[in-house]
Amino acid sequence: MEETVAELIRRTILRVPVSAVMNVLKAWDFLSEDELQALNPRQRKESIAQSVVLQCEEKRASLNDAAMLDIVCTQVLQHQKIWDVYQMSKEPGEDLDLFDIEQFKSSFKKILQRALKNVTVSFKDAEENAVWIRIAWGTQYTKPNQYKPTYVVYYSQTPYAFTSPSKLKSTLPLLAQALTIASKNHKIVKMDLRSRYLDSLKAIVFKQYNQNFEIHNSTTSLQERSLGLDINTDSRIIHENAVEKYKVQKITQETFGEYPQPQLEFAQYKLETKFRSDVNGGILAEREEPLRCLIRFSSPHLLEALRSLAPAGIADAPLSPLLTCIPNKGMNYFRIRDK
Image (tube, rainbow, N blue to C red; front, side, top):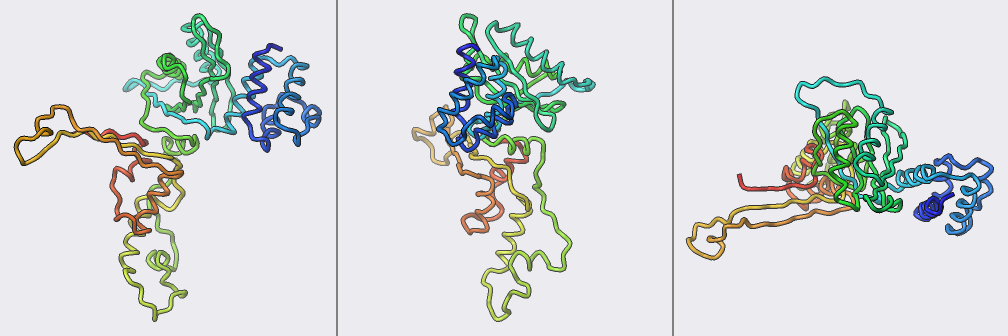
């Protein structure tokens, strides 16, 4: 077994929390049950990693075997990376082609290897017709860096692909070209949408979330359910602002729906505008360059935080469409310019 393979296996295991190591090794499906049972999960992670490396040396693990372990690890720890979204499209009026996932893999790999001598590409099929792709980039003069690969998650027969950032910015055009041609599309664009949560990005672009308010059949009215004005309410208690609270609750549910929101950590707004004033003169009035401002909203769960603002009395309802349109537009990067 090559030294690069042994080191990649060791580093990959060290990335995994000790509580998840055995599950990752089982999902890898390279070691037998007897070999897995021979490992001591109570040992330090470094000792477990060394034991796995010795087992892999006996089984003569290949670079592709190590790459599969790395993909499994990344699937488990996918929230540790920032994911970008790419959207592809065909020519107007172009017919849909029959899609073959094996043909996609072969075409994708050939495109990269023809353009770049030193590159390794590995594939792993996943649920929901997804294929995970691991790309270790090199240059014309250096071997592929197996420790800083790029990951791509492509859902077959859809126009979307999700990618982790590449350390080599020069590889992005090549990656975009390979995705476009292999998926039999004509054009590809990077969406203004990023997150650590791959499932949430998928829910947004595939519209797998509910953003419409639904009235459920019930003998209790929405107003009673929202404010607790049913049999649990003492009629002698005066509820100040009860109507206003109901209105806020209704608007919030109409805007965000009743289901959990996709998880995003931030939304960023770049504003460019000319200075305007009724007063003549002044330094800013003579400025030709637009004024620029950057505003960033951050939260561990931004959309749920926005949904809670009006009911908590922190903001008026309805919120600005620039905040509530994030899932519908599939964006959390906005550029606002003068018309």
